[in-house]
Length: 305
Image (tube, rainbow, N blue to C red):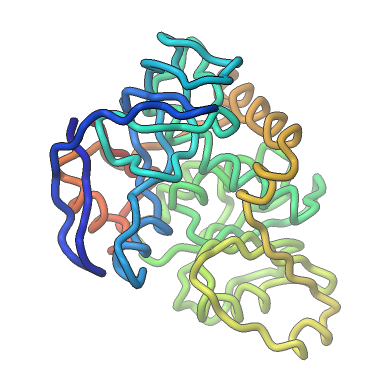
């Protein structure tokens, strides 16, 4: 089978031929039909001290199962998070990280919806969002952000503000249900909001925090780091919460499953519309990474083995 790999930090991605892996205890061997490309994986290629497997979201058909697997069998369609080599024709998923793809949804739909949607929905839950509150979503055109805009709206936000890096993204974000859009470089982000979901981090944390009304809540779920001054929290009685999906998947499987079911229900009734920016062949993984690095994507970027 084919697999994408690299040999040094920032080094070029290339295809190699390797044997099809065998599923171990609790694992599923999946023929990959779609693989999601995410900013954290792109950053690993450019920043990790040593090469790591290119994993992430994938969806496809179960080919075989390892010992102890009880929830799935060969021929079923699944999606889930792969911690090993996912940029490949075949990949291994642990049963606990897999979920079925319902009839009426494609593998690309599943990759665009489930993991990114879980992060968006989890961040919204961490913000303790209430109907009638105003929301700010940074990276609003991204794979997670474009779903967060829709979820905030569907959960009764009175006003949704989408923050983006490029004016070319504003029309797209408004088409998803955002009332207004702002650019990161603008000094004034308009009327204060009750909560903000930040996927960017770094220098953007300060303006995101400043956009909150007194008592507002900022949820940070970016891998981009950044620093917040305690004084900026104190003067407005504001709060910051860090959100990590892996912790929910590991420690709260029943909540993880409930959120997945909510996402699929909203997708099937048309409330939630995942958007795919582009589908790239496996041998074009480097081009897919370039789109993410340049922040050009409107929605999800997908590899299509």
